[in-house]
Length: 169
Image 1 (cartoon, rainbow, N blue to C red):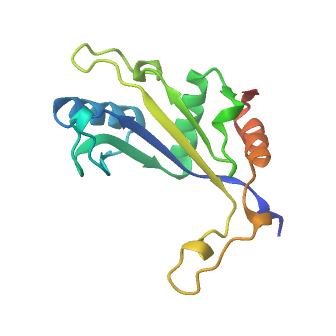
Image 2: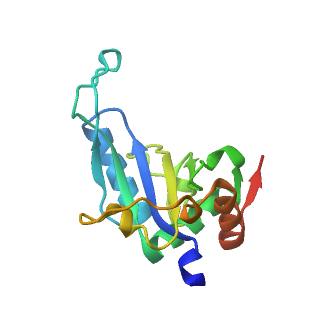
C-alpha cells in the first residue's frame, strides 16, 4: 500500500490578474497561452469595487490549469526562474505552494514584445495523495482522514526531493 501514501502534483494553476477587461486582458491571455502552451480561461470578479471601477462578473483576469506531465515540466521551468529557491511562507498548512513570477520573458524562448508589455503571473501548486476522489464523488462522498492529507512539512520535503528546491525561512 506504499503507493497510496505517495505525494504527487495534482495540478498547477497559473493566474494573471489584469484588473480590467479589454485589450490588456486579451494580451494577458496570449502571454499565458504562449508560456503554458494551453488555452486560457477568463476569471470573473465576484464583487463590485467602486473605487477600482470593477463591476460584478466582469472579466478581470485569466488562468490556466495544468495537470500531469505538462504541469511538472512547467513547474520545473518556473522554479528555474526563481533559482530553485522559495520562501517558507509560500507553503500553506495543506502542503500546497504558491509563488509569483515577475515577468513572462524570464521563461526560456520568450522574447519581450513591446506590443504586449510586461506581465507577471502567480503559480499555485496543489499537492495530494491518491484517493481524493472519495471526497469529491457524488455518491457516498467521505472526508479524507487527517493522516492522509499532506501537511506543510511533507509538502516542503516533497518539493525539496522532487524539484531540488531550497526553502528559505
